[in-house]
Length: 302
Image (cartoon, rainbow, N blue to C red; front, side, top):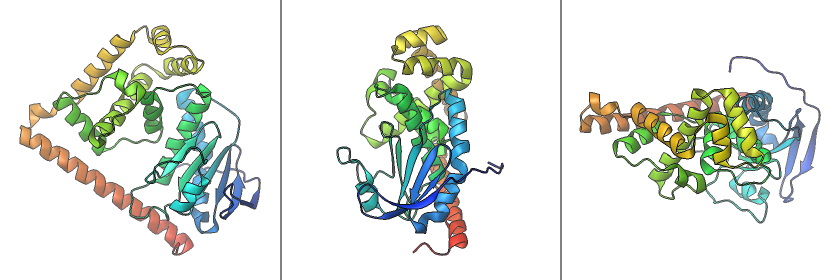
């Protein structure tokens, strides 16, 4: 984060977006084409300066590569965000970012369009870029939900006290979600969905960090080529699915079961509540500082 990166901007121009609703400035780097409106120039410059290093980091972690340029639109409003989406694949109104691997396209809401919501646009970009990279590697084949979301969370550094609290509660209440359920779809209920994301993060982290990057790269490459999960897991790690799940769940229970030893039941829930509050405060403060910095550079966005 403390390194200064320089990328070559090959072209700057003005284009019309696919929906014909607004004019966009355009800038290219080696692997990206960014489209944005003038009011978001500072936000775009911030992302453009970090996009190539982010891509390099993610590729190194996953052991994957592709050369095609990824288009990135920064939508100035929620209405424009909806218009930019493919007609046959509209997202829920609450979505703040989307990735379309088949189109090699990322759509982001400008922070101006989602004021009042917590959003780190660089982390959001990393999350969606991971979906692009993984989706293109799998070439349209089904990707296990835990793998797709777990990798995106891992690369966006989406681990905080809230997710720690979700994991702790899941372990303490013995409500961890089986791997087979995380493979298809995540639960609709909010708390269970949060636990599904947290478990997915930890499974990816377990495979990548505990088993080693080289094995994980082989696992992803072979899986993306169309081999079954069972075959690739056995080849790479010498485990069947039941053994992997047993190891992984045992690690989760060990890692998140220490609180009852130190605290009473009341104390546990007090700590969990405190974790939520601290996480919320830190995110809100960081977002305010970033918004203030952009305003100082560019004046008020309105």
